[in-house]
Length: 341
Image 1: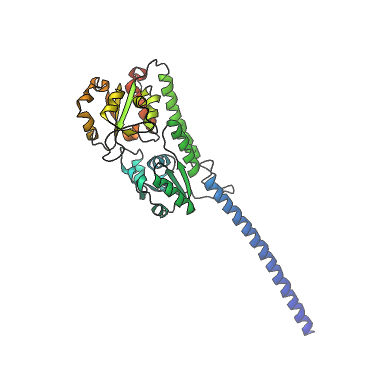
Image 2: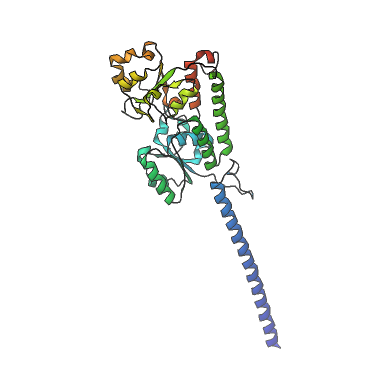
């Protein structure tokens, strides 16, 4: 009798253990399935974000962390700081500290990570900030190398060509907004820029003749003056302001070192000087010291002005305001009584 009871108890225990194992197996399968689903959703949030709200929550209501961004080119850094808070950005270029180049200098100070210039990008240094997304404008070989190494390390890299026109500026804002989970904010900026472009186009549409404008500027420390050509946003700015680029007469395809012979050949109606650091036009002294400089129409008519690099040469949210300022200087009657003056 005792053996029968013992066998019954043993059988009961075995049935209980089997039931427990079955429940555990079902639960483990469900947890694994949910984990894979959450992982897929998280991955999709980073790579296919379609609105700024999508970066904040997933379909099941779970709060997702916004991607950490390293914007290692000045144009991308200035743009991303327009659409996300500084705490989401882990690295910016050192040039963000220059108030003559960057419009978001103060926001840039709140970003702890800094990287070197475009010609000396260090992929390992960028990786040390553990970014989810890296934004790079590719102009130099070092940027191409950095893109390859960062991609090989498994980091999402979004690259851009030079921001040479306002059309490209608007498109790049939208691309950055999508990459960092701030589509709505980026679209707001894009529409703001387009609205100002449309305003300028309406005002200058009636012009029957357009003056020629030359933009001269250094392109870095101790470079001397360059004629700003296609590829720099100031070239597009001249056209949109209701003028024609004087550099067209040279047939150049990019910015080139300025010589007195080339400047005389263009003989522009107006000259705009780019200011990179507030130190004046010492960089222009070799051209200005030559007697032929004073024979230029722009010089004789006192039609020379200076604009900060961030208003004239560096593409950002407010470069369009520099275009409006230029247009008002060239065509004051079109902007009479307007804020652009």
